Length: 185
Image (cartoon, rainbow, N blue to C red; front, side):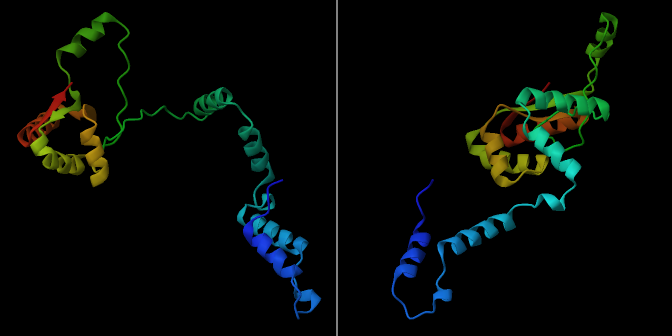
């Protein structure tokens, strides 16, 4: 049992002091305890307000281990046909699905000839041009100023993925003009 809190002690001390108040005006310890319970119950969601079927499912899920939860997620994704989305950090454009790996060597040769989508990586930047680079990254990626600063300071870091060739060349030239080294892979 935890020691009583200071407000509870103060209230108990008041209750023990001789007063001219009538006895019904002095709060008892059980009354204080009931108030605290009512306050606690008012902040938590009551189970009667939700669907009992959902409540039992939530209770069962909360008792799963991490591996069982991962298995549950993969089963739900397969049953509900939910695709796995790549978690690309700071891409501002729509998410593009990664092309499937080629099954035969014959298909790999044409893909190596001409690449159409590129990944842009901020490798480094000139210390004197840091504010300009931060502003450009903020504008390009749609980040806040603080996030842009953290992003630039954590270089080398992937800026964008799945960028068309013309746009990637334009971004590389812009960043080069500001004093940053951006590599297109």
